[in-house]
Length: 69
Image (cartoon, rainbow, N blue to C red; front, side):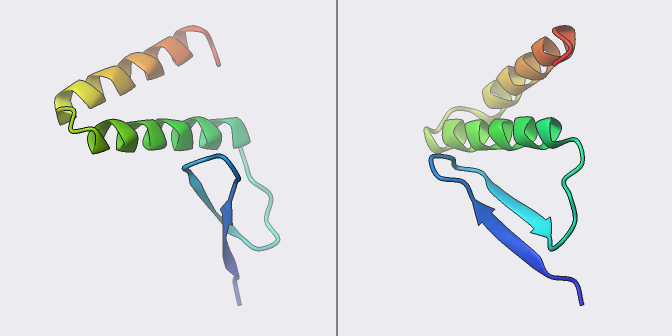
């Protein structure tokens, strides 16, 4: 039986789903993705146009790739 848990980190909007007993792989990538998803949801909640939000998210991803982070 595989146990799936939900971790909520204080001070964050992201939720992290993990399978019990397994380590996270590429943790920094998961944190970065969760950050962008939370940021996107916040922007959409403020009624910004979806194209604007996606364009800004793309710019952040490109900058992260450029800086090798």
